[in-house]
Image (cartoon, rainbow, N blue to C red; front, side, top):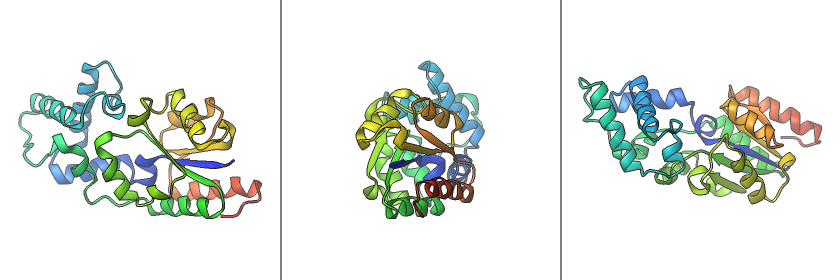
Length: 217
C-alpha cells in the first residue's frame, strides 16, 4: 500500500445525516423534504440523486433553483425565505467543522511516509468551501474530484484516474469511504477499502493494516 485515499463527505467531514440536520437548523427545510427535492431534480434528468451536480452537468445556481421549485410545489406551506438554495454550498458548509480524528489520521499517514489523497464526489462551486472545512487539502498528494474528471464514485473510471494521477498501481491504493457501494467498487478496481462507520474503529483498522507493512502510525 502506497496511498490512502480519504473520502470527503462523511469521512473528513461530519456524517451526511449530521450535515442535513445542520442545514435544517439554518434553513428550516427538513432533511426528508430537501432530499426529495434533490431526487426529483435528478429524476427529471434520469440520473442518480447528486449525479447532475457532482459531474458538473448543471450549475449550482440552476440546481438550487430547480430544488426550490420542487419544494415549493410539494410543500407549499414551507417557508423557504432562509434558504439560499441557489448558493447552496456557502450555506451548507457554513460553520461546519471537520472530523478531527480523520484529519489526524490523514496527517499520521503522511508522517508515516505514505501518500494521502482525497477522492471525492463533489461540486465545482463548492471547492473553496469544502477545502476550507478540512484545512489540509494543500497537504494531499493527490485530489480527484468527480466534477473535474467527469466520473463519480462508484464508477470504475474514477478509480483508474485516481491511481494514474498518484502514479501507483491499483493494488497500492486503499479507499476510506462511508458508502459501502463505493468501497465495493474500489475493490472491483483492484483497490483495498475500509468502510467508514465510526472514526476510532477506522483508525484502528488502518493501524493494523500498516503494521503488516511494518509501518507504525
